[in-house]
Image (cartoon, rainbow, N blue to C red):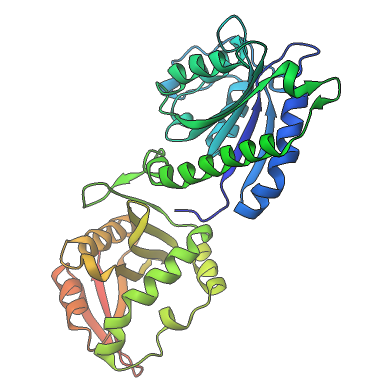
Length: 352
C-alpha cells in the first residue's frame, strides 16, 4: 500500500458565469495550504467549469468503466488518483447544482471508499440543503460523507473581494481537512482492495497486488522482522534484508516483479521474481511471524512459480543452509537441492 501523500481534490462545482464559487475555492486553498503542508497532504483544485463535462454521454453504464470519450477518461483519471474530495458548492432550489450531480454520475468505481467533505454557501441556509441532497447521492457511490462541514452565509461572510477571513472560519476549514485526512487513511485499505486487477489472498480479507518503489518503507520493515529466524538459524547478521537501506529496497523493487500480500492495511507477506533468459529467479519470500503456519508462504511461492513457469525452463531460489523450515517448504513444492555455496546458502532448483 503506497506511502505517497494523500491527494485531496477541492472541487468547485458552480459553472455559472460570475459565480462566487471560484472566490470561495481560492479562499479555501489559501486557508488550507499551511495545514495541508503540515499533514503532508497534496491539494489539487479542479473546476467543473474548466472540466466542461457535457451531460452524461457515455454509451455504457459507468459501472462497466468502458469509457469512450476523452473528457470522461480525463475525469476518471482525476477522481481515480484522488484520496478524498472537498466540494465547494452553492445551493440551487433546495439542492445541489446539476453540474455536481452530473459529474458524480459519470463515474462509479473511482469514487468508492473515499471521503467527501463540503464547503457550502448560500443565503438563508448557507447552502446546507445542497449538502444534504448531495449526501444522499454520494453514499450510493460508496463515497463517505464527513460529519464536519463549512457553511458560509453570503451576507455574513462574503463581500465583493471574496470570503472575509476569520479565525473561526480558518479553524472550521482546518478541522474539515483534518477529519477528511483521518478518514482517507482509514479507508485506504478498502480503496486498495477494490482496485482492478487485485487478487484475493489466502486469508479472509487479504489481497495481493504488485509492489512498487512507493511501498519500500513497508517492505523494509517486513524483511527486517522476517529474517530474524533466518539469522538465528544460520548464526549470521550479514544478510541483505538486514543491511539494505530504503534506497536499496526502492532499487530492487524497480528491477524485480514483486507481489505483496496485504491485510487491513498491513503488508503481511511478499515475494519477488524475475527472468534471466530461460531461468526464473525467486527471492525475498517473507511472511510476518505472527501469521506463520497459515499457508501464506506456500501461497506466495506458488504465485511466483506459476508466473514464471510458462516462460522458464527452470526456476531457482536460495536460502540459508541451516534454514530447515524453508528447505522443507521448497522441497515439498518440487524444488531440489542443487548446490551449497561457500557463504552458507543452499540453492534449490525446480524444472518447469
